[in-house]
Length: 386
Picture 1: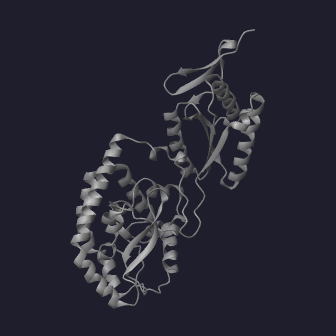
Picture 2: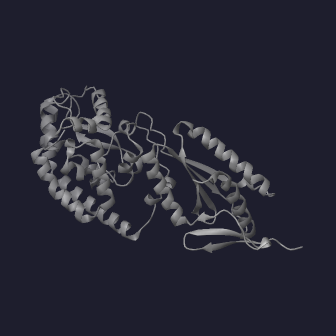
Picture 3: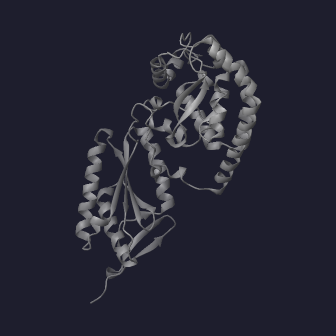
């Protein structure tokens, strides 16, 4: 009796195909290599942002087993996933040789839950008849949806699954060296500035305390790098009993309608004007950005960087479009940044996000130094400050 043998044969640079020696060359579904499959994830995310449709990624993890059983399992899973692939699905290695991925684009956002149930059921049903060793019970099936569900209200912010963002988990030596140098600069400069501004801290604290009843410092939950919440510190610039729903309404308007307002009336400054919640000393602190000096402590302990995107509030994320979230995924938030020195509240929200993304994707020590050197002038002039 002739034994059936199956092996993986490389084809070109970016594809592999299963070959069945019992019939000569019987093709099985082709898989993208890991590098090209992860590029496809990034590409399909961007396409989902443009189309407004959802993307579902299926990750099927095979159990640890012998080479013969592994190849047999690969064949069964690939054939099962090929049932779903159709003309638009993308099949490839997520983590060879045990995790196979399938990208299913163009899913109706209103039917994501039902689509996920159908996909999981189809994979399980298709694997079962192709394997007599209980493979369907031993494989792990994970489904990831993009765009991810909108965050709930409050301070609870779900962490993103980095499987949908392979570019964020790539460990390049050049990026690693830059991050070490950037963190070193943050520690040295924030320590020096905290000591240097210690008399200023005491001076401001006295005026804040005398201006209105309440604490000197204002603590607020913000969303940091990779959507990790942290407590940000500022000098209190509002009355302690201030109603924060006003800011909630303003943020909702700024994110959703500031672009339309600028088109109708140019130039427009997007900020809360004549805000009665702000104390007289608080108005001066905000205009000069002195209220943000305590954030050097956030930099020192690693929650923030000297330079980076402005850290958003949790309820701001409820208003974000999927592509807006990249500003809290690709860089650690900063005290100052490209938006702060270029536009501040004179830009629309989309323009602000684009500036943040431009910084995150081209950041270097030299760009950080240039932004830091430009920041004092923006503070003194208060141009566009809120």
